[in-house]
Length: 72
Image 1 (tube, rainbow, N blue to C red):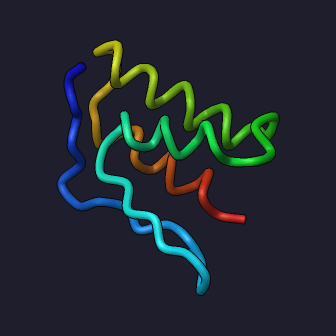
Image 2: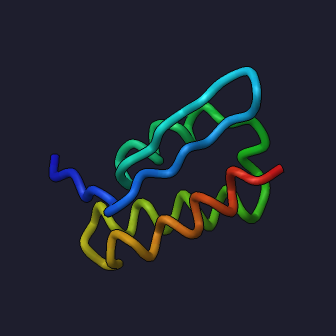
């Protein structure tokens, strides 16, 4: 599997946990473990990361969708 690295990784979490996500593939793994997968922002992030893996979208374009999905 190709890894589509972001220039700067996202640091997700709160005061209890810190998760560093540096690629679309890592974001997919993080998204699988997130609750509330029926939310529109979660689904947008999932589709964006899948599009990167499939070569239909630029790597950095999915990063903003993942960042939005991480906000509560």
